[in-house]
Image 1 (cartoon, rainbow, N blue to C red):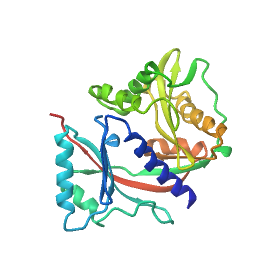
Image 2: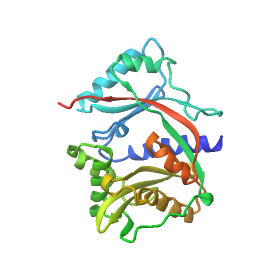
Image 3: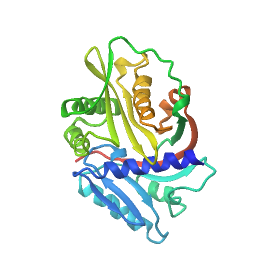
Length: 272
């Protein structure tokens, strides 16, 4: 139960922290919570809370999508539910109960669920050799953050046209805790990234990625472990993340276990 709460609370606080960046437009009521980042990537334009009456939901969905489109945002993620857990949700389940069907009717698509995972930071599998030419650094200034953004764009398929908006989003948050960005350099070239967010009393991992040409050398696992070991040195005991299907097996081998799954829908339209 405690791990599930930690996963959900850390994710919620992470999104709240991102939405503090000066360029972000945010909306937060008991019925609906979302923000627009200016970056063409669904995870950075999320609808995080939906608590609507059945007779108003279609109107609200349509007006929300129209607002996003008016801001030239055509990539968004609409969170819908949590499953696979035995404890009460931090946020109540999305309402109405048929929200998913309503979203499909408005043109959104079902996305693969994310797996909420957690691990004891004192019990991680740390037996990973570091390539001799790999150097992992924390982004403490604009030049390193630019490298973080470049790897993000290539690794996650974010359009190059979003480079400035993505850099401004992160730069607007500063370079101090609770959020640290990491870049891995192989022979001086940026090839991997990871992001650490300290919130809800735990260490959350986000944006873990290795460029395709550098995979198969353990770089992704080292990018993941390095921030967690720094969090452990700061006194944190639990690490959490929301894993994609591709990364889930890697995190299990490092000591993480599944505690819940999060469902969401996404919209990705041609940009005009």
